[in-house]
Amino acid sequence: MHLLIELRRLIERIPPGSTVYLTATDPAAPLDLAAWCHFTGHHYLGPVSTTARRTTYAIKSDVSARRACDASPWCPGPSDPDADQRTR
Image (cartoon, rainbow, N blue to C red; front, side, top):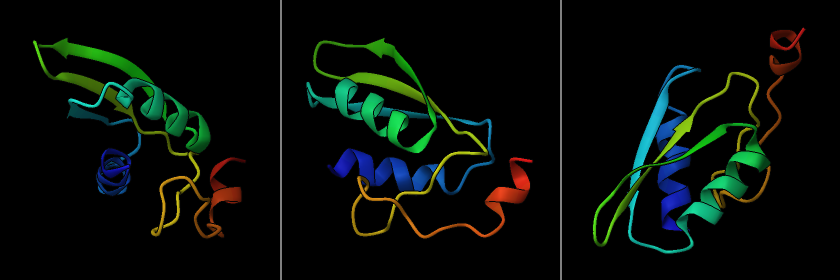
């Protein structure tokens, strides 16, 4: 869960279309990251580097992605009143 909280924090700070790289030791990380990206609309690019204990994963941000709430990375965030304008 900490990995997803960190991802949400990072993805909010970068411009759409940018790529975030996260390094994790949790064997569930690829499943959690892929599911979170599916939930929010960002793009899971998969593992890009692997060492004996850690793997680095890439996620590309998307302008039309949904925001996760601050309390939990798995709940929808507040509605963005400008989102409809950006997708038209």
